[in-house]
Amino acid sequence: MTRKSGPSTTRRGLLKGALAAGGAAVVGGAARAGNGDPAILEPQPWRTSLGDGVDAHPYGMPVEYERHVVRRNVPWLTADPVSSVNFTPLHELDGIITPNGLCFERHHGGAAVIDPGMHRLMINGLVDTPMVFTMEDIMRFPRENRVYFLECAANSGMEWRGAQLNGVQFTHGMVHNVMYTGVPLRYLLEAAGVKTAGTWILAEGGDASAMTRSIPIEKAMDDCLVAFKMNGEALRAEQGYPIRLVVPGWEGNMWVKWLRRIEVGDRPWHQREETSKYTDLMPDGRARRFTWVMDAKSVITSPSPQKPILHGPGRTVITGIAWSGRGTIPRVDVSLDGGVNWHRARMDGPSFDKSIHRFYYEFDWDGRPLLLQSRAMDSTGYVQPTKNQLREIRGTESIYHNNGIQTWAVNEKGIAENVEVS
Ligand code: MTE
Ligand code: CO
Image (cartoon, helix red, strand yellow):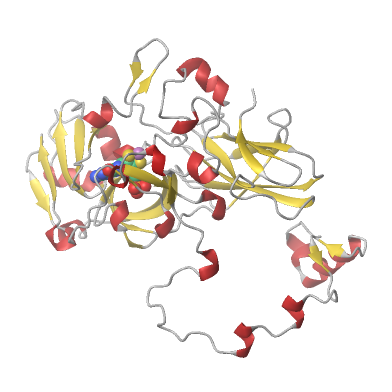
């Protein structure tokens, strides 16, 4: 088979590559023509009758063969689905963008459905002129388009004390990565005029949970967006329609959905979500708080427990994702033996600041068991730690901010399982 890009991707190059492979019956895993395969020899129904006309699906949906690619929840995790979470099917995705309908959902009071004509954003507190913006008002400010990951601080939280959930969707699926279109929060704050004493903002959601988080004014003025589009279309109700706060690189809880109010103050408010929740209990009994930035993390999405190797030994593609709240991901290493030997993965696709990156590692699997791991390095030089390195400092009482290295054990049959190596 041909693996190189460049000249060998031409027709002649491909042919030469195939011949160089020795004229064996199998070329790059595919069968040679002439083996009697009915899927290529016989006329199929989709060739002998017409398909649907245009407008059969005014809003396109995935083909029926992909109906298993859905968000899923873990019912025993929470008492009720209105204050719960479901998970992005990371094992089925490729590239760096999460499709809108597959972005994990986390809500504390259900998903509000808000009439945009009735929606208002108020800015009050330590400002010269308290303001109330309609959606029309917001649309008159200059917009920016940015690709960012959103990771819930509780992502991988069930794994602190050992391997628990058997699927990358459940261990790592509280992350999504979309292109937002929005107005820099700075413009709205400047319109109200922040007083010099104004050093913090409080962002408040318009849903039944009235989610509220304190954010330092430096971050608010730096790269936060009031977003109204994701991947080019309106935000989904689940993601905060008509507007949500985008807080790049910082824990998902601060990305207030259904944003209705920004109060400017001179100190943090110490709301429930920044005291009893979203703090990390340390071994000495004290708690870390205001741990906003999401550190570098990576995971192999395929193979993984929900995505076994079905083709047997031979050429095998490993792929995964990596991200950091502190910058880009210039490098990911992959191990096949539980972290003894490391191989540099191939990064592919655009590399955006505080966005998911895609990596691949192609190799010839000999059919023996594997202990697959990936390890991200971000643009600051920070290297993703092992889970035990994390535990040495943080103990096992934490829920949030688990960015330790994930291991999948793959057996001779290609079945993968969530394990830990010590
Ligand atoms: N904003 C409001 N108003 N209500 C909420 O329940 N959940 C927060 C945050 N913003 C929440 C909210 C949490 S904990 C996370 S992880 C993200 O939204 C999830 O965003 P998503 O549902 O778009 O994935
Ligand atoms: Co969250």
